Image (cartoon, rainbow, N blue to C red; front, side, top):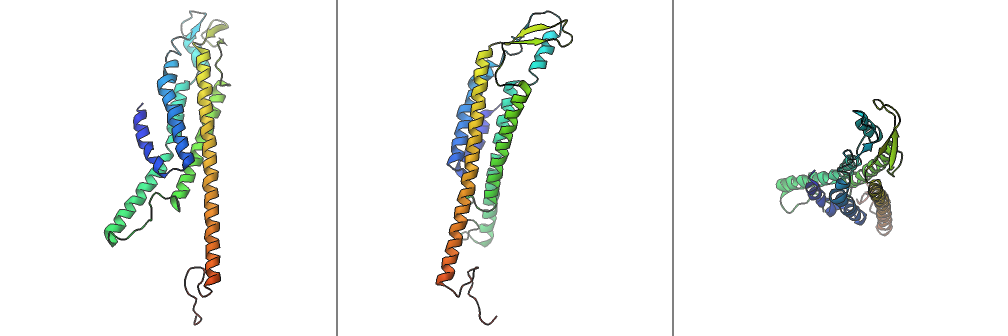
Length: 243
């Protein structure tokens, strides 16, 4: 998989992210993608080839491996990384849409006119898009954590599993290769995922709090304006006594 290409696409998100969003992106690429590519893929590269059972019954080893490991940790984490980074493209596409509207507006009304003060500023629809992307990312993170725990019943990999699935002749013992090393990486990836969830929740609260404060300041400014200019209504228009 071309993780460098994904990083190149997401690097543009930094321009529109808050401080929490920049930390989240750093955690994803340093503690998750980099660890995944450099170390985790190699640790799980021999998972099926070194899954040994104390029987030579044809098909028994493959059936037991599929029974206990229906989906590889590596493939599940790869899907997780793809799903949690895709919502960030919503923000990039929304900003690109705004920039295109800005370009067309200037072409029609002149270069000195502006439709947006800053197309990347999180106001109006872009604020909602950014907030929705955070909720989607958080939902994906929690869903994949639940799937990992549900499929394997634990984040810890056992040293030995017992299998009696057909065509195994009886109860056979099967041994997982490098279980301690795989357990360490499992806990590390789970911990990084939980950290990303916490960062997403902090960013959600930050965005909502900043929006509430901005609305309060705007309301206070409008109240003060009406107090000093009683002939101006709430829309900034002078009231007419003739109407």
